[in-house]
Length: 198
Image (cartoon, rainbow, N blue to C red; front, side):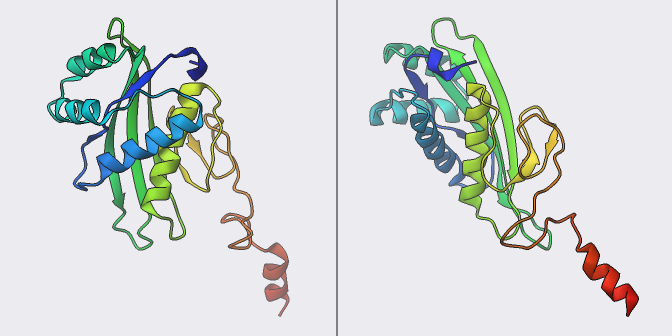
Protein backbone atom coordinates (compact mmCIF):
# COMPACT_ATOMS: atom_id res chain seq x y z
CA UNK A 1 0.00 0.00 0.00
CA UNK A 2 1.12 3.61 -0.40
CA UNK A 3 1.84 5.48 2.80
CA UNK A 4 0.77 8.66 1.06
CA UNK A 5 -2.78 7.32 1.09
CA UNK A 6 -3.11 7.23 4.87
CA UNK A 7 -4.16 10.09 7.11
CA UNK A 8 -2.96 10.56 10.67
CA UNK A 9 -1.33 7.46 12.11
CA UNK A 10 -1.10 6.53 15.76
CA UNK A 11 2.09 4.58 16.47
CA UNK A 12 1.45 2.44 19.53
CA UNK A 13 4.46 1.56 21.70
CA UNK A 14 6.08 -1.53 20.21
CA UNK A 15 5.46 -4.61 22.36
CA UNK A 16 8.70 -6.05 23.72
CA UNK A 17 8.86 -9.85 23.49
CA UNK A 18 12.59 -10.00 24.20
CA UNK A 19 14.63 -10.24 27.42
CA UNK A 20 16.16 -6.82 26.69
CA UNK A 21 14.15 -4.21 28.60
CA UNK A 22 15.18 -1.42 26.23
CA UNK A 23 14.11 -3.12 22.98
CA UNK A 24 10.49 -1.96 22.84
CA UNK A 25 11.21 1.70 23.51
CA UNK A 26 14.21 1.73 21.15
CA UNK A 27 12.25 0.24 18.24
CA UNK A 28 9.28 2.56 18.91
CA UNK A 29 11.49 5.65 18.72
CA UNK A 30 13.21 4.40 15.57
CA UNK A 31 9.83 3.69 13.96
CA UNK A 32 8.56 7.20 14.78
CA UNK A 33 11.67 8.81 13.31
CA UNK A 34 11.51 6.70 10.15
CA UNK A 35 7.78 7.30 9.59
CA UNK A 36 8.23 11.05 9.97
CA UNK A 37 11.09 10.98 7.47
CA UNK A 38 8.67 9.37 4.99
CA UNK A 39 6.19 12.20 5.56
CA UNK A 40 3.69 10.15 7.58
CA UNK A 41 1.75 12.42 9.97
CA UNK A 42 1.89 10.92 13.47
CA UNK A 43 -0.52 11.72 16.28
CA UNK A 44 1.68 11.27 19.34
CA UNK A 45 1.00 12.79 22.76
CA UNK A 46 2.58 11.79 26.04
CA UNK A 47 -0.82 11.00 27.54
CA UNK A 48 -1.83 8.81 24.61
CA UNK A 49 1.52 7.03 24.61
CA UNK A 50 1.30 6.29 28.32
CA UNK A 51 -2.24 4.97 27.99
CA UNK A 52 -1.44 2.86 24.95
CA UNK A 53 1.75 1.51 26.54
CA UNK A 54 -0.29 -0.04 29.34
CA UNK A 55 -2.79 -1.41 26.83
CA UNK A 56 0.00 -2.85 24.66
CA UNK A 57 1.55 -4.64 27.63
CA UNK A 58 -1.84 -6.22 28.33
CA UNK A 59 -2.32 -7.18 24.68
CA UNK A 60 -5.44 -5.02 24.28
CA UNK A 61 -5.14 -4.07 20.62
CA UNK A 62 -8.85 -3.28 20.25
CA UNK A 63 -8.64 -0.62 22.97
CA UNK A 64 -5.60 0.90 21.27
CA UNK A 65 -7.63 1.21 18.06
CA UNK A 66 -10.40 2.95 20.02
CA UNK A 67 -7.82 5.33 21.48
CA UNK A 68 -6.58 6.11 17.97
CA UNK A 69 -10.12 6.90 16.84
CA UNK A 70 -10.49 9.32 19.75
CA UNK A 71 -7.37 11.08 18.45
CA UNK A 72 -8.99 11.31 14.99
CA UNK A 73 -6.45 8.96 13.43
CA UNK A 74 -7.22 6.95 10.32
CA UNK A 75 -4.77 4.15 11.09
CA UNK A 76 -2.88 2.50 13.94
CA UNK A 77 0.55 0.92 13.62
CA UNK A 78 1.07 -1.97 16.03
CA UNK A 79 4.40 -3.72 16.42
CA UNK A 80 6.27 -6.45 18.26
CA UNK A 81 10.03 -6.86 18.60
CA UNK A 82 10.81 -10.57 18.98
CA UNK A 83 14.59 -10.52 18.74
CA UNK A 84 17.01 -7.83 19.88
CA UNK A 85 20.40 -9.21 20.83
CA UNK A 86 23.95 -10.03 19.93
CA UNK A 87 24.37 -13.60 18.72
CA UNK A 88 26.37 -15.94 20.93
CA UNK A 89 28.60 -17.21 18.12
CA UNK A 90 32.20 -16.18 17.55
CA UNK A 91 31.52 -12.94 15.68
CA UNK A 92 28.71 -11.83 18.05
CA UNK A 93 26.67 -10.26 15.25
CA UNK A 94 23.67 -8.13 16.29
CA UNK A 95 20.30 -9.46 15.17
CA UNK A 96 16.89 -7.75 15.34
CA UNK A 97 13.47 -9.05 14.33
CA UNK A 98 10.38 -6.82 14.21
CA UNK A 99 6.79 -7.44 13.08
CA UNK A 100 4.39 -4.58 12.38
CA UNK A 101 0.80 -4.33 11.17
CA UNK A 102 -1.21 -1.36 10.01
CA UNK A 103 -4.81 -1.34 11.23
CA UNK A 104 -7.71 0.69 9.86
CA UNK A 105 -9.01 2.66 12.84
CA UNK A 106 -12.52 2.81 11.37
CA UNK A 107 -13.23 -0.93 11.48
CA UNK A 108 -10.19 -2.54 13.13
CA UNK A 109 -9.18 -4.47 10.01
CA UNK A 110 -5.53 -5.19 9.25
CA UNK A 111 -4.61 -3.56 5.94
CA UNK A 112 -0.91 -4.47 5.93
CA UNK A 113 1.48 -6.66 7.91
CA UNK A 114 5.17 -7.39 7.56
CA UNK A 115 8.18 -8.85 9.33
CA UNK A 116 11.82 -7.89 9.01
CA UNK A 117 14.82 -9.71 10.47
CA UNK A 118 18.21 -8.09 10.10
CA UNK A 119 21.69 -9.19 11.10
CA UNK A 120 24.68 -6.89 10.71
CA UNK A 121 28.15 -8.33 10.32
CA UNK A 122 31.62 -6.96 10.90
CA UNK A 123 31.18 -5.40 14.35
CA UNK A 124 27.82 -3.78 13.61
CA UNK A 125 25.79 -2.09 16.33
CA UNK A 126 22.46 -3.25 17.71
CA UNK A 127 20.87 0.17 17.21
CA UNK A 128 21.95 0.37 13.56
CA UNK A 129 20.62 -3.14 12.92
CA UNK A 130 17.29 -2.20 14.52
CA UNK A 131 17.15 0.94 12.38
CA UNK A 132 17.67 -1.14 9.22
CA UNK A 133 14.92 -3.59 10.28
CA UNK A 134 12.46 -0.77 10.94
CA UNK A 135 13.30 1.06 7.72
CA UNK A 136 12.86 -2.17 5.77
CA UNK A 137 9.34 -2.49 7.21
CA UNK A 138 8.42 1.09 6.35
CA UNK A 139 9.71 0.53 2.82
CA UNK A 140 7.62 -2.63 2.54
CA UNK A 141 4.59 -0.70 3.75
CA UNK A 142 5.21 2.14 1.31
CA UNK A 143 5.81 -0.27 -1.56
CA UNK A 144 9.25 1.11 -2.44
CA UNK A 145 11.01 -2.18 -1.79
CA UNK A 146 14.43 -0.55 -1.41
CA UNK A 147 17.02 -1.63 1.12
CA UNK A 148 19.56 0.54 2.88
CA UNK A 149 22.56 -0.14 5.07
CA UNK A 150 25.12 -2.94 4.80
CA UNK A 151 23.02 -5.70 6.29
CA UNK A 152 22.16 -9.25 5.37
CA UNK A 153 19.15 -11.22 6.44
CA UNK A 154 15.62 -12.15 5.55
CA UNK A 155 13.33 -9.64 3.91
CA UNK A 156 9.65 -9.39 4.69
CA UNK A 157 8.73 -12.12 2.23
CA UNK A 158 11.39 -14.45 3.67
CA UNK A 159 13.52 -14.55 0.53
CA UNK A 160 17.23 -14.38 1.20
CA UNK A 161 19.07 -11.25 0.13
CA UNK A 162 22.71 -10.21 0.36
CA UNK A 163 24.09 -6.66 0.64
CA UNK A 164 23.30 -4.66 -2.46
CA UNK A 165 20.26 -6.78 -3.38
CA UNK A 166 16.77 -5.34 -3.69
CA UNK A 167 14.10 -6.38 -1.21
CA UNK A 168 12.20 -9.38 -2.50
CA UNK A 169 14.62 -9.81 -5.39
CA UNK A 170 16.01 -13.09 -4.06
CA UNK A 171 19.73 -13.79 -3.85
CA UNK A 172 22.08 -11.11 -5.10
CA UNK A 173 25.82 -11.62 -5.30
CA UNK A 174 27.76 -9.56 -2.74
CA UNK A 175 29.53 -6.46 -3.90
CA UNK A 176 33.15 -5.78 -2.98
CA UNK A 177 33.49 -3.72 0.15
CA UNK A 178 35.90 -0.80 0.14
CA UNK A 179 36.39 -1.32 3.86
CA UNK A 180 37.15 -5.02 3.77
CA UNK A 181 38.66 -5.42 0.31
CA UNK A 182 36.88 -7.90 -1.90
CA UNK A 183 33.41 -9.28 -1.21
CA UNK A 184 33.18 -12.33 1.00
CA UNK A 185 32.74 -14.71 -1.93
CA UNK A 186 35.15 -13.00 -4.34
CA UNK A 187 38.66 -14.43 -3.76
CA UNK A 188 41.69 -12.83 -5.36
CA UNK A 189 42.19 -15.28 -8.23
CA UNK A 190 45.49 -13.71 -9.30
CA UNK A 191 46.93 -14.04 -5.82
CA UNK A 192 45.91 -17.71 -5.62
CA UNK A 193 47.47 -18.36 -9.05
CA UNK A 194 50.75 -16.71 -7.98
CA UNK A 195 50.89 -18.88 -4.86
CA UNK A 196 50.42 -21.99 -6.98
CA UNK A 197 53.33 -21.01 -9.21
CA UNK A 198 55.75 -20.72 -6.29
